[in-house]
Length: 75
Image (cartoon, rainbow, N blue to C red; front, side, top):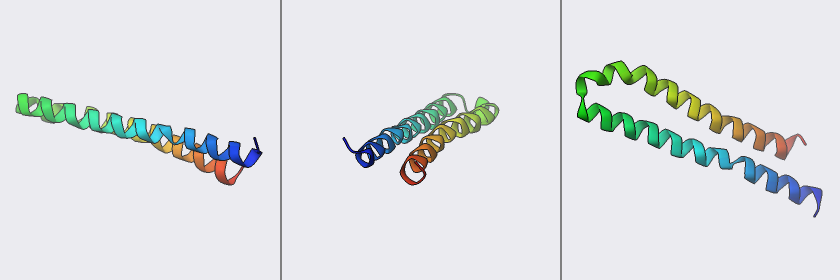
């Protein structure tokens, strides 16, 4: 296997983190919406947890994207 092909395979595998981030963000917002519809008075108290979960899931996806870009253009 050539080094160029291995670089593309590694970058593609690093992009799997973006899939996980998308699933995580969908789960976080879906569960928040379900909880907010069941108990609207508690929704405002859970909003900071929603933002924290979103930020952590998005950071994981961005980290995977950065690793993929590093593999493509730096290594």
